[in-house]
Length: 161
Ligand SMILES: Cc1cc2nc3c(=O)[nH]c(=O)nc-3n(C[C@H](O)[C@H](O)[C@H](O)COP(=O)(O)O)c2cc1C
Image (cartoon, rainbow, N blue to C red; front, top):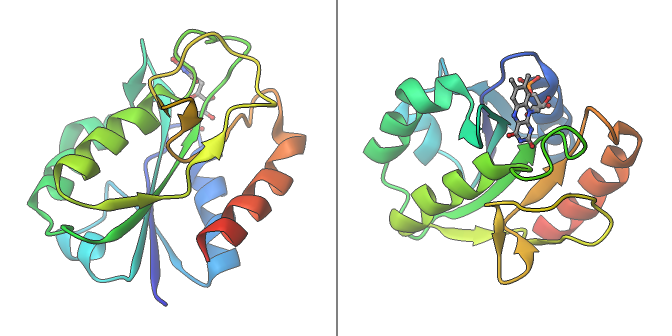
């Protein structure tokens, strides 16, 4: 199986998480700022990740350019998994919202999203990344709960593979 992990990152946390995930699945971590449309297509499992900024927004490189590349890619029927980084203590009303925005995009393109996770064990008020009471992917809080990330990543990857 070939895996591309395409991420956006301002301050480096999401980049580091993407590298950790890619290493575990023997995949390639690719910054969305440098990604090509082919990077979205040329893998059997596509993993997309973004931190949330602003009032529940995608990271800048996703907003400006990244979404266009995704829109141009043919990912109909492709297996896609999502992860989001956020800060539930500081932003409890928009925790990992960006992951929900990515979800809407890939679903609209006909992708099959795998790797939903339980919301239990997190402490937040609202998230656009929830569907039917679950997160649409892996939610990580590198600001306040980085000690829990390793276990969360491990469980998620075993769910994916
Ligand atoms: C200005 C600002 C706004 C943020 N807004 C949110 C938010 O709405 N929801 C959330 O879960 N995290 C929010 N965060 C936290 C970041 O998503 C988190 O720190 C993330 O790990 C940053 O990833 P990066 O280092 O890859 O850029 C915000 C952080 C900053 C600095």
